[in-house]
Image 1: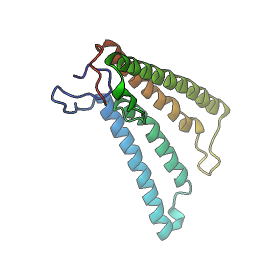
Image 2: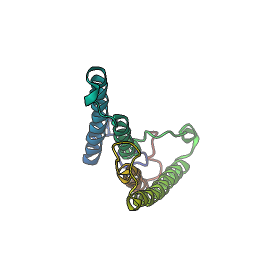
Image 3: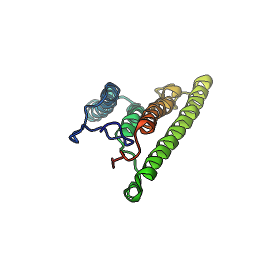
Image 4: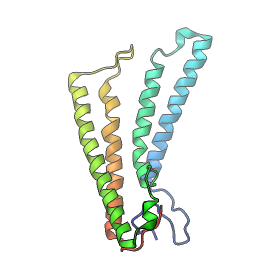
Length: 179
């Protein structure tokens, strides 16, 4: 049953398959980045109320960078799990052949979009690196590290769309099921 056009892997009994190694790695990294952002926030709140001289002046900036990286790294997992916003009510009324074509078109469009965003993200990141852009706070954080989240996340998303597209091309028409 996993050789279908959808991005929901299930066993023959409909049970969810365990996540892939790539998905587990992405889950751990995203979780750690989120946890680190919460810990930075907690540390700073406690120190601002007890001993403000030890508080991190750029903690808000650090939290934003951590969350942005977590969000962009989660794009691949979201794509693999079929958790993007979609209007799937139309799919219920399509014939198996049209449903198959709709999935193919959707995955191809997603692949092209994510590849374009990866390319543009690399351009933005290279500009930030070449110009030596840094944040305007006291942290003076190199912005190319911050902007690199876009091409990395979109590349992970591209990889997932490519895998979905290949699975859909190999699957026989009529084996689509609603994610």
